[in-house]
Length: 295
Figure (spheres, rainbow, N blue to C red):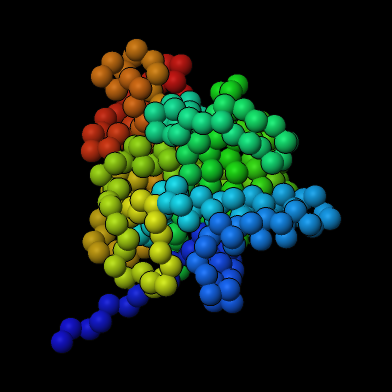
């Protein structure tokens, strides 16, 4: 018999809430998620500290949406992809993501617990499973009526909301808290841009070697691999740890691009003869000398 493939430990978004629900079902001999939600919500509302109360309610509402299968679960096949999108890919343009949310999100009325207001918006919810990591992310993108993006999130380090106006302010700061917020916002945006730019890296299903068999994820599950287009060509074969090229995603809006107008591309930060950049769109690749007004 062949050697058994070692299972990979994947992070589980909202793990603490799922563990609370499992304990509740055992104690109450019931799997009524609505009853569990009602009890947990009442308990959260009783917290005298407003910030903690809101964080607990947001986490609980995320769990309910996850239970109902509303999250797109994304399983990264390489942890390096998380590091790459969070730390190495600059965020220069939100136009592409706003269009993506309009085309793929759910248009509905939103009740915002942070500001106690309601408004019509576009939502898109994803949950990230990262190999060999304890930190599972859950993001809810919200395209606001004024065409700005707000991201609600629950991860191993915190719970909260980041608006694009806040991102524009903190991205130039150097304190650890600001850098953490910037990294979270950048990663959330880049994961959507990456899937749109490299659809050939998106595959249906859950990795067969994951170790989280006790959790059931009711929403759509996809595996996300690494595109060869973002790898450095160093002549080595079968390298276990991929070497990524730095760059950024961009939506081409100028008529200069003709057939590529409206597409999301990956721009490598590799200069050729001090003036040329490499533009990558899925399986197609070209070099251009000028971005005109696009860069």
